[in-house]
Length: 161
Image 1: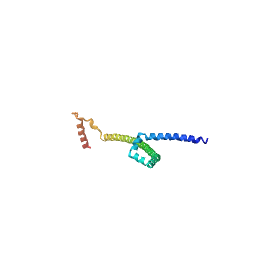
Image 2: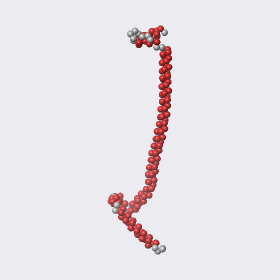
Image 3: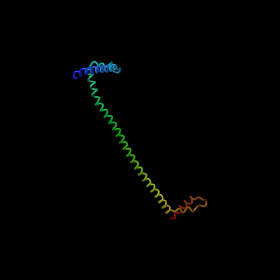
Image 4: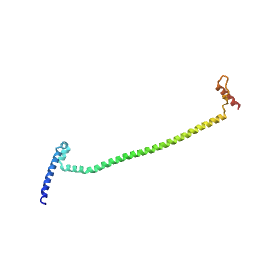
């Protein structure tokens, strides 16, 4: 069995080599790769294979940290966005409840003030009517002009008192 392993391994390696050569050939025949290799950067990297390998390794190794950084940025932005929405919702809710309380208090105060004003008006009008009775309404002038009779009677009443 030890003698059978090397031939199968070499056969597997030959198949792998064929698959890799087909993969490399398909990549080199890709239109985007051909366009890149015709550019100045592609030609420079083709003449400097160590630099091309270094750039490839750098890009491959930096993909994970850059991906994590972008993920953290997106998650932080989403958290800030959700936090702002929650904070804004909280502020609007608290502000709305405060406004509701203030408006209820103002309506209560306005009802009390309206009642106080109405009661004051009734009391003052009753006191004015008590102190200065409208006795002149029964005295009308023969011409029917009640207002002139009231004014003249008021003036006479004021001089007599």
